[in-house]
Length: 146
Image (cartoon, rainbow, N blue to C red; front, side, top):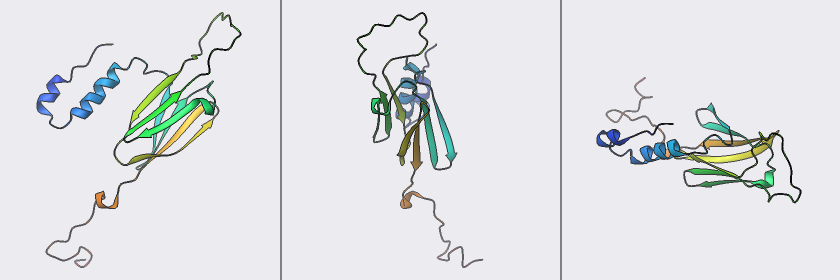
């Protein structure tokens, strides 16, 4: 995989340092494929992350939201005393840590495990003062002029 160079964008895009840093970190992430996941937008303010975590019990998974970051960790128990001899091993049996950068006002509202899939539900709650509002022109409200 080739490296991406965002240096030319730093010269003309002011205030986007955080975005470019995130893109560089994501491009450098070597463990990007495990475990596989989907991000689904259910409507304007509701999202769902679905992760394939086959082989992990609920007690082995940890979901943490810190400010605008969602961290999902899976920790396997220590190796069993019985040594196994595989002819072929295609199922990954390793710990993982997957990080998601959340937009402002997005929070985790729930999580559930079903058939080896971990579903994490997210909701964007924009504060009242941040929502769009109608502005009256010349002191008249828009409803009065109709």
